[in-house]
Length: 282
Length: 282
Image (cartoon, rainbow over all chains, first blue to last red; front, side, top):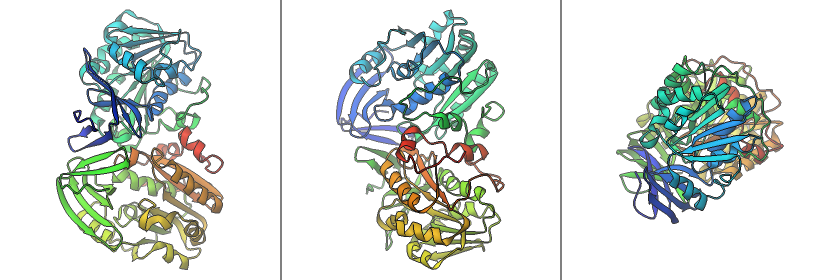
């Protein structure tokens, strides 16, 4: 999927379409145990992290993804103290979580090289990785979570696309383990791919979550470097009703009170695809 | 801006980034009096219409743009009977407007060749161009509108980017003429570019509208083939409060009641850019 030319990065979103980004400079390129990790400079998006030739995050637009992955769940929980982040080795999700008065955040990332490359080359994204409330585990989260019961208030699945190393993170066995790892008022949120390009994957994720969790919501956000520039997120609870319970941190660039309510409004084509499973909370 | 190779269409959204679409077949390519018009086939997006090398519409995603340009204004008006469409030569906007029991729709398109090419090669988009309630004027709307006073319930500006032939359509003189052409409960809506790529243009449009109209709202929609996959729309009234007044037509694929309310929620970075001018209606 990755163009080997130094000059240009191409990502196919279908066999017929995609995006290109000029590579001004390659800062890092290594094959880890799990995937090819690359960080390059682009004149518009700043530094760009790709895994196996797919954009994971860029300095310019990462705030949208990370704020929208974290804040809807965090503001909805009555007392978010113990948080689990699955994946998220670049540190952006942890940075947003740590804006709340949490007690303990566990980050379980399978690929230690992602963490190290992000620490070195993406300082604005990885800035909170040394926070003393954060514990980093370089392990497979699908196994790590089996030993954790009734422990977390919020679980955030910040994974790559569900092919390759992240496939197990949309499996029913994993979702069952998350259910058990969550406390009574617990919330899980998981990035759920593009409504423009991956509608069937969104439906698969929804079906699996709906079998296990009594409450399933979905919301979306516009992220320019992801396929179609449009991304879905699934949020589940054990019965907790979603409402604003925490103060929204200052200084955010995407999320606010209006977005919190508005983001759960689903386009008709998506609503019909997840009909009978996804509820709109507002 | 357009790649002359037959095989691939490239659109730069900044000097450093953009999208590519494979061209399976070129159906139409002509230089009109105003612009280069091309229609080609793409394996994912279907038929694609470009003007001067910028995607205007595609068969796959046009429903999002056209529904979101038309329905928020139409459902908000107490009795939308006389409608003006500025631009919109492909017919998609007219198709959506004609789903309401309107009396008269005027479509003022400067480039007759866009209409003819769309009639021939984009039948699902141009399908309503022969409706007997529609009158087509191949004229410059900035001049045409000068002779129309207190005549329209809804004015919809479905223009190309505000460079070249469409520049006058974001000018203050044009907005003043639209104000005069609208009846008392009148609503104008205008496509307003990408929050990811054109934030300064959005602010310019907002400033000009705000000088003339007492009520200015803004909303957004995710459109994969437009820069950043994310688009803004500005909506103004002479004082009319926005609320749902018309039944939403059946069979829509993007717009619905939740979207109507949720789409006006603006991301913080956009909200701050238009602060003091744009009100959230809900």
